[in-house]
Image (cartoon, rainbow, N blue to C red; front, side, top):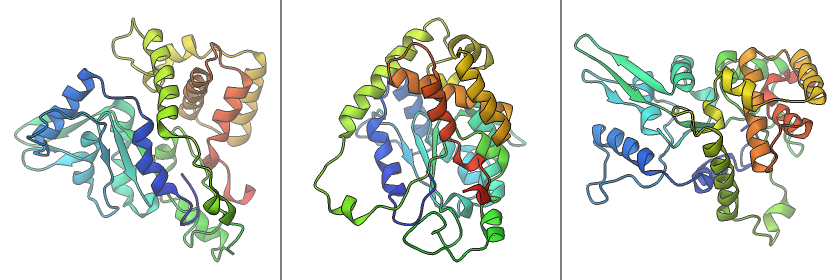
Length: 294
């Protein structure tokens, strides 16, 4: 999420767990094992019943994020297994710390090797990150004048490498909240109703992947599953080709657009991925566009 200070990025992230499906028994057991190894298990409850939400500070070390120690202990990526890992002020994290996340984001596990032993912990987490659009924070805010030069903005965003951005499915801009929105009486949509739609989409995916034991959701699809379940018509092909050419997207970004479009179609209860779902998925790649084109 990219937006000026006070636009609600952190609040949205903290509410995110409330719209996720409940843990299955298998997921709860796996999560409990990791928290038990880390010494974080609540002895009164015994079983972790809610999806983890971890939000480490940007001063965290790579060992704290991935795991480590003389006897390797799980880090934040493993403690977020089957839950949410939230990194606020993403460009403020040290670059070497962010880069070590690339392998667990791709493989869903992390291996920590020491002289005496080597341990592999699961790390199938959902990454949420928030950042300002520029060092002063007001590049996209129409109510405040940005004091940053184009070079400063480019250097600020360059703290997040292209390969890491490629592994983030959705880049969405969060605009500043207006006074009318703050003072309005509307409560918006409740998390419970959103969760019901998410759970309905997850049930569709459970049926879709019932014969594939290692694939539980669209995010876990490999190239073979993408070709099988994300077929698009000629209009969708033309739209995707235009986006790939103009934005210069990588093969990984291409696959992730198709996965997101498949999920949007599931939420819309559409059996096929159409140009509408593809167009929405492409719009969620805002950081792939040049700064000077905005």
